[in-house]
Image 1 (tube, rainbow over the protein chains, first blue to last red):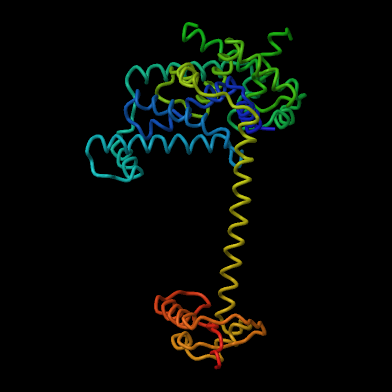
Image 2: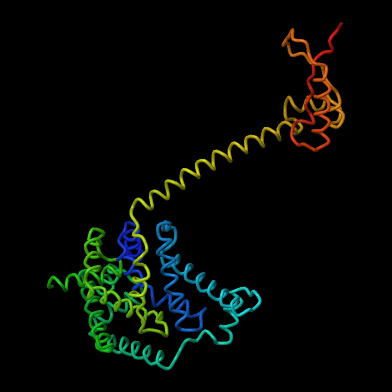
Length: 192
Length: 188
């Protein structure tokens, strides 16, 4: 089993009429897609609009998604096409000559124009990153090891159990407790 | 582990694809109705995004509410949506295959008819003069069908004219190689 299992299950649920399952896919992939779109679209608010648009397109196209590729690969394609189309339409609006959107992107990247980092964004991101890393660093060894083997090395629970010489149930519990500890700190950070 | 803790632990396992298939349905239903579980799911993925360096600059953004709003007017899919669309696609693809096979068949027959070694039509072509001239000939071929009806003499003229037109208009196919069948002149 893997993350693909999770996506397949959620996609099947959406295809069978469970709209709420799509929300879980959004929560799962929103940051990755915002990051991807931000490489194309410079203006942060535009990047969010394009991301939203990409998710809506993905939802509408989901009945035709047959799972030939991983869900994220499929979503990635939709998002990058949506961003390229946005760029192209923006260029047209500005009266620029039709330019290949790939060319636009590489030119903007070369100029460093894809940077959406405002001071507030940088600060917020730094705080989140700092909190996550610091909390993980202060976790008991067994929790930290279980979580890092899972998140950095992508090992399955069974493989982690083998490495750590403990039952799979223990791995499950350690990963959960590690995540809960970090999550609690994040909630404190955001004042929830 | 208390009940709530157990469910939260399931959320953690689910994001790793490490729960049993039969547990997914109930967990998803719970997550749909429990804001706290959804926040837990979101935060766990935020942690993953930080660790895998996938966090965007706008790390404090949560688009899910916006997207949910935007999708509120969208139809909910049903198993039928998928089946119906695939059924339609299947039906049309069947028709398309049948049509393709039919067209292919016609093309093959026509090609065979004009290619060397292509059978009866080739023999006919090799035994006859060039296509341009064959059309001007009227072969009074009797194929054993006998008729007592008197033939209109204009019919032969019509057949000749038609064949001339067909060849000069570059109508492709087997027509240039075909014998033009008329009727024997009426002996008086």
